[in-house]
Length: 222
Image (cartoon, rainbow, N blue to C red; front, side, top):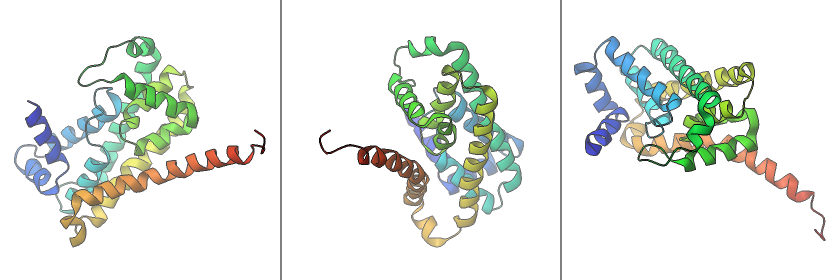
């Protein structure tokens, strides 16, 4: 079962295999619905953290560039999936937060992921909802933590729309534009890792700006 799941995940992040899947098994609206469901689960279900996010969107952009998907339609669908997933996580956090925090670890659920996201949220506040879109695992748990923290829904929604549109559009369009570049296709997995690293740079920059001012305020005798 695990081997089959890993093979399916690899299919989702390999352009040639995803094109074959969409051309044979998941044709037409079934393919669009499947991709919608995967993005929804990755962002909205606490057990969906293992699903591909950035790499899937980039691969979908490559597949759209190859003519197998309508770019505008798939971007609109995946933005909707991302935001619906986030809203589900937020509502779950508001209604069942304490119970989830007391849930024991399992193969698909780790308390450590919640704790790391909680610390991330406490550090960055509402902007976590935007930052988290570009951070694997944190992306899955951030809306839930916002719900647990009772962030006002209107405030959560404003951050979430900005983050969801930016994340889906940037990753998908990047894949669409760069997917046919020979060096990218020859080093596809490495390039996806590079994309993820670049997406994390704003967070690293913000962390450094937050860290060094505090140090500069320390007196010699402190």
